Length: 410
View 1 (cartoon, helix red, strand yellow):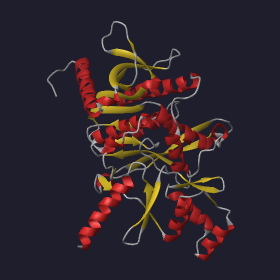
View 2 (cartoon, rainbow, N blue to C red):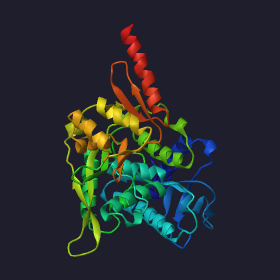
View 3 (cartoon, rainbow, N blue to C red):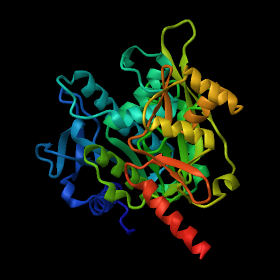
View 4 (cartoon, one colour):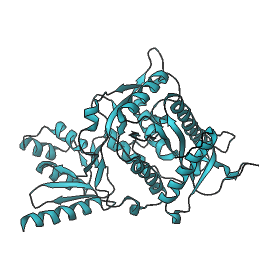
């Protein structure tokens, strides 16, 4: 990049490069700014100095320091910590800087008064997709383990997106996985290293780690209670950065134009799963982690992207989901149970299969949709497919499918 060897100057060069990239990626009509400085909670708490912050509104200039600001964390959309290289010590330093932003967000939420100026609908949908149940109205009194999962999902919608970028360092996906696994193993018993505090994205030249807490990437909890929470990827890291930033922006103002056709899905390889754990002989809870090892061949297998596909429903599922588009359905409905038994379907296993699609969740004894705008389509090959079409994604997929179908038929 340059023959300059003075470390502070090199750091400033990489920070400047990151800001320039963000300026190009963020549409000017959104009236957002990219600044350097500190996130504050409005009650005296502040983060460490952050290299790049994507902000809205107005901040407070730091006296006698050009271009540096204090910005209330409620108006900070994203924070990016930039490192020339991202190995052990630098990774730990960047983590602590981003963890400080998460802590400032928590202190701001605890001290905030009056009605909230944001909606948690996106987090509620992600929770339903991950857990398979609607969030109860009295979520403060819900099961502690599920509350911990809800808190992790919710805080990642409210807090700034926390991104760590290393222009050098771990050059392979496997190397980054091992480095972060070792870092977390050394700190797992320390406060501030559970899922709510983990960065949303860690990017190096050759790989990335992505948090799966629902904004934008998520994964349903396994039947044994383990929640996939960190995955790795070697797709173009710029795409991952943009997905995170654009998702955060879309929570403030719908911006479907940012996502394009959105008909490809990035390949992600699971690294870490998390599970709430009640500590022995104590009322305290913590998190435990489980690491999934993957060989270089496993990580390299397959394309970097795969085509997005709607959910394919079997004929009986299609009948029930079509009814769910009209009204919620009770799992105790005797007519429904008789219908399923007549079709040789075990009712409970059938209900579980619907929940596994993530289009449906339980609300007590009822089945309800998790989507904003579910649409079902019967394809000319006889299959029934369904997906949330609130962004037009399913419509675009059907258009491509039908074009291909007609081309093959002609």
